[in-house]
Length: 399
Image (tube, rainbow, N blue to C red; front, side, top):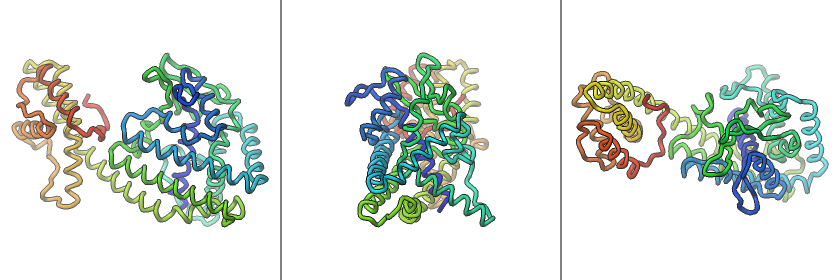
């Protein structure tokens, strides 16, 4: 219980921090016209009791991503409501926690110590371990409960306690980084980018150790959305428990959260683990396709086709193929014999061309592949863009 829930709470804290450092356009009087205004916007949203709006300010490149961010916004808003309820009922305990965080921040001038204060004892991406020694287990549990209490009591304490130490600085005309005491916060992993004339925070989902688990498909985003929805429900229940007196002191929060979230959370993590297995099988098949496609593309260029057109055609085939291979991998869980994965190295040229033709046909491009011209490649791309779900991203580009 400690391991998975602890990871979940750290993720919530990280996203909460990330959201708190993001910006927005001039909606509801807020602005993101510059990196500096992004920080002012974040603090204003928190002070105005509008934490639920924070996630709408993160840049999302798909509808699935945006849907999950909307759910996360609800969670952050309810966390803020829980913090208000706790402050009303246990003002002395909450004030003690706030002073402790301010003290830690004042005594920790560097980002490494700030990271320690946030209990990031494992390196990013490191798998959680369960100590065999009982004393170590107790220490880990205590660390988990301390972290849980901080997040549940007020996930924005870090931002509020360190507001004066935060700044934003442009790296290029359209990229900025968030700094703490003039140094990149948490090694600079949180960056802002200017897109569509506005500044947005870009969550570091492509970092090594993060990208392996970050959602990329409709199914994966849906599972993460379910996890956040579950956590949101737990926070609402905790708020009612505080209001009704079922929670009589702040120290009970972590245990109550674990009791409420363990079984549904564990089930969701099992489902996500199975989805990761589907991804691994699909990506292995795609790596084989890319190797074979690269050889085929080089041969087409030698035969006189234009390299840019060939590259565009293979890129399009990769987008379609990753969806088709995903279907095969899922079908294999029912019947492996009837749903074999392609054996790229052994596949005759005619069969390889026939498979690629079938992939294009599945998105409405019924033409023979033929000579790869710019017009032919663009017609294939247009068909794929119009008919492909487009929610499964290849891990690496063709080249």
